Image (cartoon, rainbow, N blue to C red):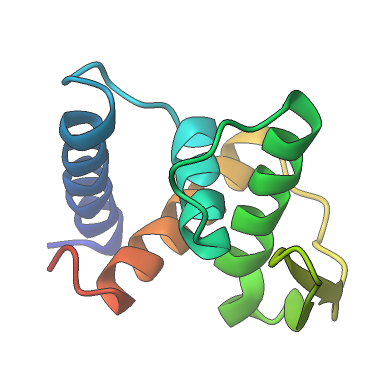
Length: 118
């Protein structure tokens, strides 16, 4: 199986798992999955978030996902329990499709690390 096919299969497993758990089977998109990862990393699950907090949760998700790739480094958790990251290396300019593939690969890697998919 090629790397592309493997990524596609694993990505579909992640989407199915999360869609069934959080969206009554409606298919979650990439942004929704990044948001859920941000909530997971924050660890405050039973809370309603304001619009700006939702944006910050997506930022946390992106930072956490791109940390293993060397783009971000965990810095500290603030007094409210929110994790903060610093930029280690700027992301290279990527086309939309390339960004999508990078994020899907990072999400699949995250779920493999958490042993939620195989």
